[in-house]
Amino acid sequence: MAAPQKIESDKQQQKAREARHVSLGITIPTTFAAAIVVGVVIGYGLDRWLGTGPWLTLLFLGLGFAAGIREMLSVLKKMDR
Image (cartoon, rainbow, N blue to C red; front, side, top):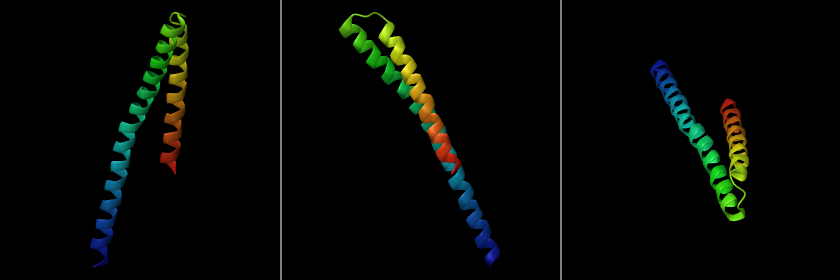
């Protein structure tokens, strides 16, 4: 009787792993894109307010990209635990 319970437990663990991978597959690109969008919006707003042209938009685009990479790496480190 122990063998069917072991198989069922293994199936549940496999489903949990697959669900976690799907979750990460959705979370990582969404977080990355959101960081970039937020950076561009802040930069664009500051450019319009200060009249500085595209410079702050480009600066905050870069900062948003860096923040997205940083958060993506953080999520991937958590996945390894």
